[in-house]
Amino acid sequence: MKKALAKIDEVINAPKAGRALLKQMKRTVEGWSTPEKSGFRFGPSSLHYASEYDLVVDYWVPKPRMSLGLDLEMYGAVGQATHDFIQTLLYNMGYLVCEGLDGDGIIEPGFNCGALFSRGRVDGFLALPGIPKEHGLCPLLEIKTVGRYVYDGMRSADDISDRYKMQAEIYQKMFGVTSTWFMFVCRDSMRRKIIVYDMVGSYWQAARDKMIRVIEHAKNHTVPQIEGGLTNGEMQFLITSSLDTRPKDDFYDLTKWSIPTDLQIVGSTVLHSYPLS
Image (tube, rainbow, N blue to C red; front, side):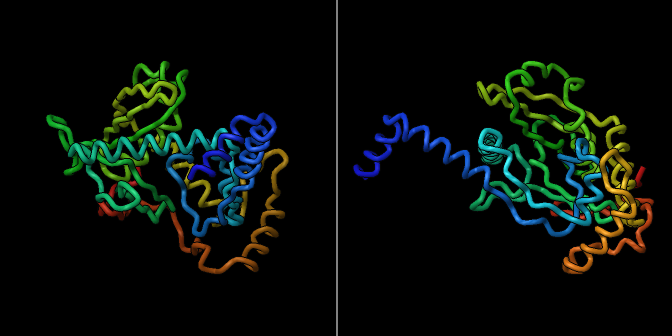
C-alpha cells in the first residue's frame, strides 16, 4: 500500500507525469463505446431533441454509443451518483415507491408500449402524506442534476425545459397519472428544489405524432428529406444492406403496423389501456 501511495504522490507532484496522466485519462475515455443496440425503441428522455431523420436512419442502421468526452462523462457520472443516492435515501425513508432494491440499487418502475415502440423507466413514485393518488399510483418523481445557471433559473413549472416536459408527459401518459415532481439538484452546490409539473397534454401529443411519423417512414422505407441527407433511393439501398447483414430478429415487422387507436401498456408496475389521444 505504501508503494502504491508513493507512486500516486510522484504523479501528483511531478508536473510532466501529471499532465501525461490527465491526457491519458482523456484519451481513454474518448475511446469508450458501447455495442450497437438491438431492438429499436423511442427513449422518452431524448425524443424531444432527436431529429426524425436520425431516428429513421437509426431504426435501420443502429449506431454504437460513443464517448461524450471526459468532461461530459464525468458530469454524467456525478449526476448518476447523485440520482442513486437520492433514490436510495427516499426509499429508506419510506417515500419512494419502486420495484425494490438489489445489489445495483433501486429497481425502477418500467413500461413497454409496443404500439409506439416506446419503453422507459421512471425514477419512482412519491408516496407522501396528504398527496392523492391517481389510479392507485402516487405522483411520478424525476431527479435532474443541473448546473448553477439552470438551477437558479428554475422558479416555476414554466421554467422547466421542453425536453423535460415531453419526457414527463410521456411517462404520465404511460402510467396514467397527471403529476410529476421534478427534484432539481445543483451539481455545483448540491442545493435542491422541487417543482411540480402537471400534464397539459400538448407535449404528449407532439411526442405521439413524432413517433407515428418516424414509424410510418420506417414502414414505407422512406426518410424525411433534409439538406445533405439521404434520398429515398439511397435509403432503400441502405435498408437492403441492413437486411442482408443484420439478424432478422433485430427488426420489427412493420408490414401490419397501423396507427393504434389505444395504447396497451405493459410494465412492472402497470398493465392497462388508454386512448391514443
